[in-house]
Length: 127
Image 1 (cartoon, helix red, strand yellow):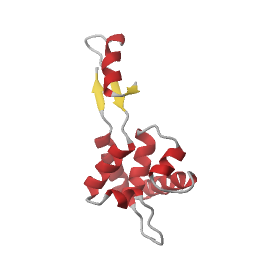
Image 2 (cartoon, helix red, strand yellow):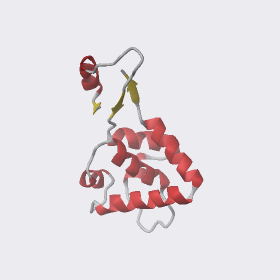
Image 3 (tube, one colour):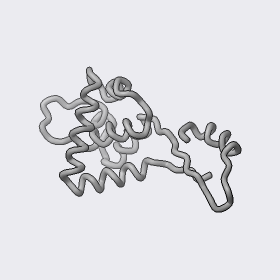
C-alpha cells in the first residue's frame, strides 16, 4: 500500500491482521526529499544533483543515484523526472538509470552504496 501518512493512517483500520502477522506499508517520497537527502549525504549542493554539467566526463554518482531513487520511490513518470533533473528529453533519464545499473553490476562498491542509500530512503511502517 502506497500513500501519504494521512492515507496510511486512515486505511489501517480496514486491513485485517492477526496478532502474529504484520504488513508493511511503503511511503512515497517527493523528488525534493530524495534530492535533499542525497545532497546532504554526499555533502554537495542540490544544484550539483539537479543541473546537467556539460562537458563533464566523470561519473556524477550523486546525480545518477538521485535519478534512479526518484524513479523508484516517487512514482513520477519519465517526463516529470526530466523536468526535475533539467534535461530536455525523458530518454536522458532512462540512459542515466541504465548507466548506473551497468555500474552497479560492474562495481561492488557502487552496488553496496546504492543498496545503503535505497534502504535508508525506503520507509516502512508496520501495521
